[in-house]
Image (cartoon, rainbow, N blue to C red; front, side):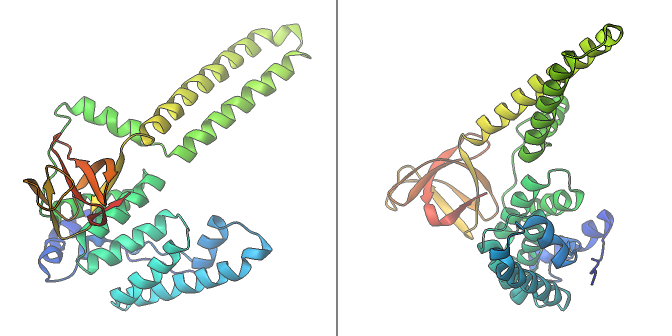
Length: 287
């Protein structure tokens, strides 16, 4: 059985979405539920081993049940079912997107942004995920301060983050394979095609170096401070990891922060504008 989602145009998102943030019509801008045939999704994304057959069957059943609840407007039940699948360890952009939509319908803006962020990391070129994340960021109480005032710098930053890590890994593997094949081919290469071989080898080697450096840079960035979303309704950031310390600033759900370190059940966070403070660990969730 193939289940298709209802698509909404971007203009429709803009017209009706604002009511969601105020509790009127809930989150029309959450867009379509990114529903595919659950069995197909799970067949592609889960390892095909006999020992996992029962787990796959259970996950497929939960996914179908969640989709049905969502279409009926039963968002609490849909959120619960999607959440059970995510808790099993499955990492899938469509699943995370649907969790974001269900969270948005329930007016859990911070949680919705968290799941959209997670989905976008797995599918960085998905327009639906990006559009819903953008709208959710507009609905939340705190506004993100622009860091890149230069349009060119902002565009370059977006292009840098566009390829997913698995895509970069695949590119490195393909380039390495191409170089290896060309070097082996060189041993039996006729003289008349040596120029073509030289050009092809130079291109493959350049691709390998560029893709390798790109992958290394992205992995190095990912190994730095973790990014997290404030999922509590609001939180006072303090000057030290103690509830009696001075309040530095107050943030609200949905705000993205960088987590520097953890101490005594508190985490030191930093906003995009550089302002930092300590908040309870339970108030933020790492993307």
